Image (cartoon, one colour):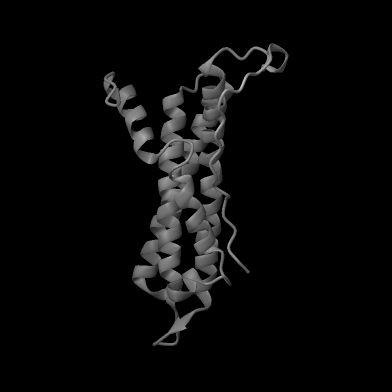
Length: 183
């Protein structure tokens, strides 16, 4: 089985005219596109946690049955338990951030910088969790038999689309300081 990943392609349009009858109703300029972008980023903030949870659960089950050297499951080793403690703590913090931003959205109070923070934080967490899970599985962490490497590869692409990690850093930085660093 070949690991699934999103298809990334380029699209170029030149000299395209859109008749007024085909314009989106109530869409005024760039604000409409950016609104969609915020919604996509919000969804990514939750979706990345789903990938993190899948990697966490897969590696936990593996660590409970994989025995090495002392004929004990590797889950009994201190360094493995530290990885799991870190993974579940970061996932839980990401869930709380996503819940908070979701509540702000429901109240109409979510700022695009909140959504940038959510996307930036949760994708980074998910990547860290996927890497730790891959490490726990050793060479099996890149085998098709386990979904971890597929999630890791997909998360690498998510790290860059809908705004790179660095772009979201600048958005948050401007919100904190009041000074744009990207202009």
